[in-house]
Length: 273
Image (cartoon, rainbow, N blue to C red; front, top):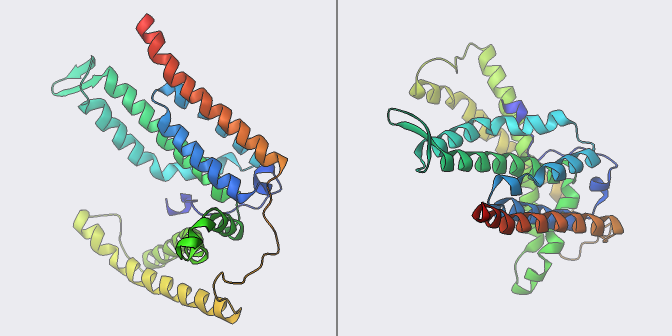
């Protein structure tokens, strides 16, 4: 299960999405998230299907990576869907004792499941196609107006990117520690909840030690390279908006407009029926 967590990983490539301006990718990802939550019915959410298929097709990210990124959240999606189906009142479709499935609950469960799946798949595309350095530059440039308020924008962007990049590193380290503990005879899968929680102690302690050691090594490496923050720093690659960025922004805008139109059109059609 730990190996299926792909958040924060970057896959080098030469696609249009890889070469897009990181500022535009961050903005369009934010618009995409708003679009998902703005859709109030399954039909509106279905607009995201061709959008994601086209985006992943252009980025040339393997389909197996999409499935790996969705696998860890499947238990949460199933649990949330069951709660929505059985505990939302409305038109009863099926009932067995105190358990009942309503039309409103089923609709809510479908909408929530699609929304979570598309949210994970869509936002993961940002880290898949953006290197940590480009992501840091994009965040810093977007929040550069906050420098007038004396906020350390560069340092905040650097911390956010490092934290995101450390996720796959810590996941890999956790998997190695668990394998080492199992090789020594540790049992982490049998027993009750309390026993399983106690079995995690031999994993958490070396994981914390390893995390602090890696953080110290990173700080030492940055100090050896004379890193002193963002003041006076220059960049080898200057960020520029190209025609491909504008084209992608127009495409996302069309999808967002389609979701809004469906939200306005669907209630009118249902009322006419």
